[in-house]
Image 1 (tube, one colour):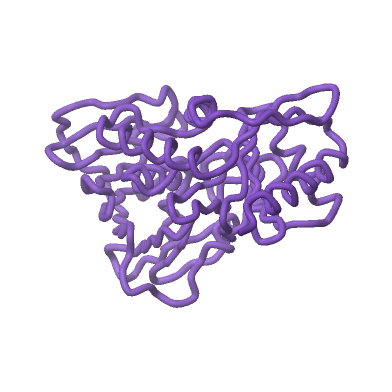
Image 2: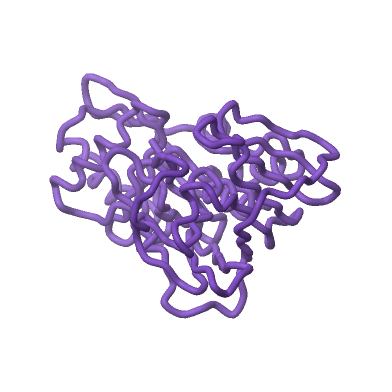
Length: 319
């Protein structure tokens, strides 16, 4: 489960986290710069982003955002693309992507708007000044789900995928266990914490980057276990979780693994080009990385089972 929005909108409270004149984040080697359009304003960062803050600026941003505190501009759409059924909708205005964010807690409901370039490298975010995303002179533009949407769409240009998954870096390489809600991701995180080995990347959202070899990264979008790391490491194996009476694994063919991986990812199916790129990323990852169906018992024995399997995979792949 991802974190709830920063709202309730409106209301008086102290600003959480820390604030900066501009913010540099790095999530799965995606560099994000966020700066206010008005130099008198600051950008606020809540605690889940602290591990992803860069102390020094980058030479260039992959995603460059300018944040405006003002009434939401009226931008006519040339095409409606997607309605999440929740707070956000997506449309096109010419060659720009337009995200509308609405909630019944605000009056009027439209409280935030994001205008992004076609490649998602640049954008403007507009926040109404009367919402809970503006506290004093501090702006909180990355309130869920905008943060995840931006990174997801940027990755979908053939760079990687975001997964419903638990990930751990063990012995310098990543084990990623994919599963929908209730599959056991947070349980796995707790068990690895109890055993005290490896570094947990995330208990709910993991990003895979198509590199040589593919790499797994933690994200700020943690689940019930509240674990999020900015660490990345080469991907050793992918697992698809299910509850069984005993710990067991079944090796999958690339064709079997690709369909399971797609079902546990966040594909932009409203965008033909990005969807084709995402399918290509999935195909190339499952062809390079061993994939398994993993049945497990929710106790510490599964950690030792996976550690033994990791050593077996390492021996098999050793030159």
